[in-house]
Amino acid sequence: MRINYYGFRAIYLHEMDRFRRTLLQSLISPVLSTSLYFIVFGSVIGNYVQNIDGISYGSYIVPGLIMLTLLTQSISNTSFGIFFPKFNGSLYEILAAPISTFEMVLAFVGAGATKTLIIGAVILATSNFFVEVSILHPLLMIFLLVLVAFTFALFGFLIGLLSSNFEQMSIIPTLVITPMVFLGGSLYSLDMLPPFWQMVTYFNPVVYLINGLRFAFYGASDFNIWISIASMIFFLVLCISVVAYVLKKGYTIKS
Amino acid sequence: MSEDLISINNLSKTYKNGLKALNNVSLNIKKGEILAMLGPNGAGKTTLISIICGIVTPSSGKVNVDGFDIINDYRQTRSKIGLVPQELTLENFETVFNNVSFTRGLYGKAPDPKYIETVLKKLSLWDKKDNILRQLSGGMKRRVLIAKALSHKPSILFLDEPTAGVDVELRKDMWKSVEALRESGVTIILTTHYIEEAEAIADRVAVINNGEIIVVDQKKDLLNKMGRKKLRIDLHEKTDTIPESLSKYDLELSGNKLSLTYSYDTQKQRTGITNLLQDIRDQGLKLKDLKTEESTLEKIFVTLVKENNEN
Image (tube, rainbow over all chains, first blue to last red; front, side, top):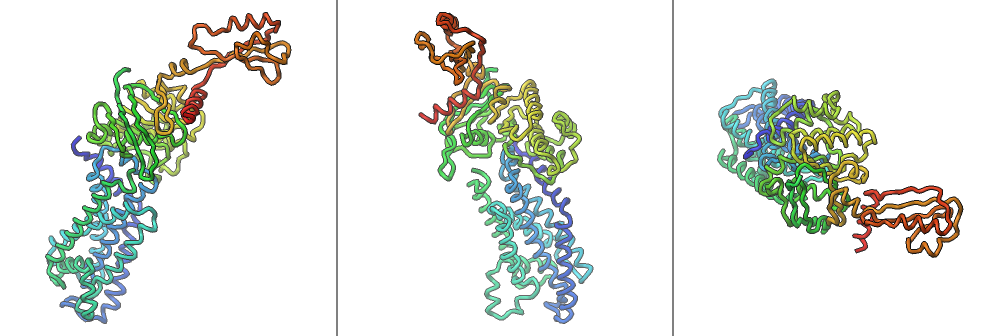
């Protein structure tokens, strides 16, 4: 057995099955909350905000809201996926199985990313009910969505590995990711900020992700698209390195 | 039954907190046998099993399974092993069938609903196949753990306290299942607190204490070598003291002064019973009844652990 395909498949399908079992929590909840954003920010407040880069405010916030969902969902799906078997002890059978660490991580992260992409696609479809959405570079959009979903699913895997209780697991998505997305230009253009806060925002990596996706949608961005892509790849490589190091050390899962 | 299937050489494990769980353990496990590992809590039994299965990393030493190294050839070794853990660690929101199928997949086997059906039927779980795990009793969950361990047809089965918290009837059912598995060629290693369990089903017994193997032997040989028998001699009338001429037999007088107990070694050619009975008669003591009692594995185990702790 050079590659444990069935082992990978078992973990992947098992995780996807959990998604199906918790459909209300996994799918309907993010769709509902994003719809509320469109109603409040897009339709109500948006009517009082002038066009940004020639795009109506409601349409302008679509990439930012998709990115918000993508980041929070990919982190929570995968962190829960690895934390739960660690918490209830059933992780022993994955550790005792003839499956490589790479195959195991790929299965968890692949499932987390798949779930997130499904949610992202549903939100994109939902946004069409509220605002007009055009996609200038569809292939670039797919590439960026897949890259972000995998990268942050991997980041979520890391959080799940390092967390020793449910509270720790929710700290980063709640206290770090959500503020970074809101302060990362998801609902506004950086040009609207005073120069000092613009400078501060340049240190927020999520800014580059949102702008990258906005470029794929409307061809409008505060940065060059390659800066966005490079920052995503940098974060992906960083996550791969840290996860590989943590798993090699066996931290929290293997004595 | 002479080929070594698992060979453990100078295996040691020290955890990060400094606990030395295993100290230079060497042990060979033969193909097709049932080996019972006995030992008090914290003796190192679960650590030993966990290392062989790949859950715990050894500090030093080597383990080969069917000629393959557990670290370098982990795919080959792990695919031969099934593990029933001590704790009821299950995905409680999945159905029995999916749970067992999941484990089969993890071990690199293609889905085989027919085989899963056979395993579940053998363990009387078929009518529960669609139940989610949290709806099952503790005993049923224990059976599910066994079904999971058997889902990929392992040639080696580790049972870590398989009957802990299981009622007597189910425990005996499990013994029958274990025996049936052995007959089908599966090598079984079990840890247990129930010495009665080891006595009933094991071929060999390894006693482990403070991370070291104190003794490994055939169960029968262990009983023969270390087993002492006791002969209880009930008397018709009370005797206040043991007569001087009987002192060489090291007899014990019971509290009610109505019986004498004589301990003897079953391995010796002459047990001394004939002479003892003759001498008792010569002393004018009248015999009422004779009873013999054999040492159980439990008594041997307690003695061995006690001696090891004193040393």
